[in-house]
Length: 59
Image 1 (cartoon, rainbow, N blue to C red):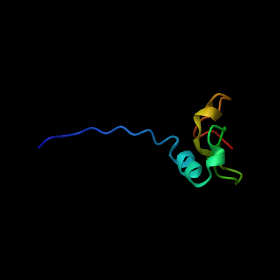
Image 2 (image 1 turned 180 degrees about the vertical axis):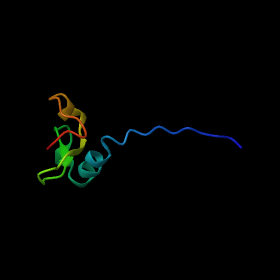
Image 3 (image 1 turned 120 degrees about the vertical axis):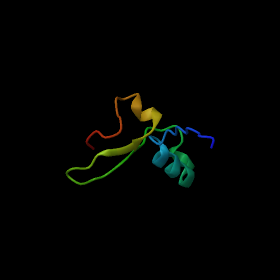
């Protein structure tokens, strides 16, 4: 049996999905997350990371 290891960067997966739907978002800082009192960033674009945003931080 041959084993394989797969590493995937899913940190920007949801951002990529939104950009497929709306190409105007390409190259812009984008946050995907909840809007409730306890909402957190589920995904953010690499452009947003320049501003210190990262996954799992409060919205």
